[in-house]
Image (cartoon, rainbow, N blue to C red; front, side, top):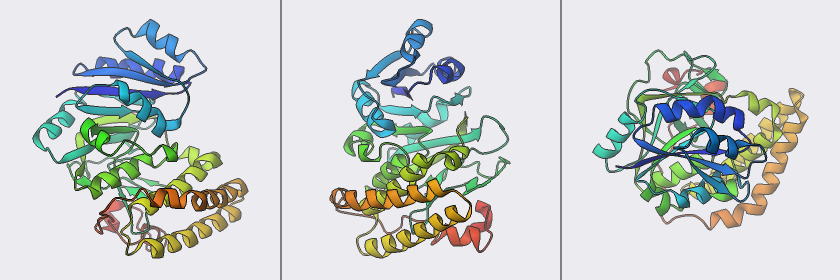
Amino acid sequence: MKIAVVILNWNGEKLLEQFLPSVVHYSPEASIYVADNASTDSSVTFVKSNFPTVQVIENKENSGFAGGYNQALKEVEADIYALVNSDIEVTENWLKPILKTFENEPRTAIIQPKILDFKNKKLFEYAGAAGGFIDQYGYPFCRGRIFETIEKDKGQYDDDCELLWASGACFFIRSAIYKELQGFDADFFAHQEEIDLCWRTFNKGYTIKYNYKSVVYHVGGATLQHINPRKTFLNFRNSLLMLAKNLPKSSLFTILLVRLILDGVAGIRFILQGNFSHCWAVLQAHFSFYTLFLKNYNKRENLQSKAYYKTKSIVFSYYIKNGTIFGNVF
């Protein structure tokens, strides 16, 4: 089984300098690619000069996470794609348990490893932790991280459970499934496109799994959520687009209405916190969603599973019942 590690890069020379060596050192089973999204720094020159075994794919424009990978993977021949952020540190033998699962479980389409915090390696990392789920209204959460509460890794999630979504920070997928589903939705540009792809995979009857025996460390974290209104816009808009595409038809409009109301509450909360730019980002997200609704509604497949959610409302469980730890919620 052939595996390709593909690192999407945009102006990330410093990150490549820091983290690419671990990928090269610990990935003898894989072909390694850096897919450059039209960087304006010296990323491409740096990789070509210092890592002769790493193949460089040069996209003509920065089309975001979704479009960038869609374009780059047209040039990659492998059975398994390992899509890895440029700020990921991998560990020894990180690929072996992943490959073993794919070899033994033909219906498993996507796998996520254990993702810990590079800055504090005893903690789970915000973006993915020990695998993702959503509630009935489409709000994502993870084992090891619910909203702002992040758990220590005490072995409590050392299993190979089924998930609803795997983190795009380190995302393994069968190339055949990726092609069958036409990859990420480029309309998303960035943020939550991996949840959408996983949900579409789930609706097709395939399995998404977690594998704790594969461990990586991720630099990224929750801090961007507070300082970047663009990320707030993309998260709110893309979450709504994802619902329009993947919810069962019988509950689609009811759940969308509730989500729009809950998003409004989130906007008021931003105002009370003094984060006016984030409130405006929520409003912009809704206007963009209205514009794109019909286009994304028409992307719906024939079948949407009703068994997509782990709990009815993670918002209620977290803020009202104080269920800040995954084990306390379920």
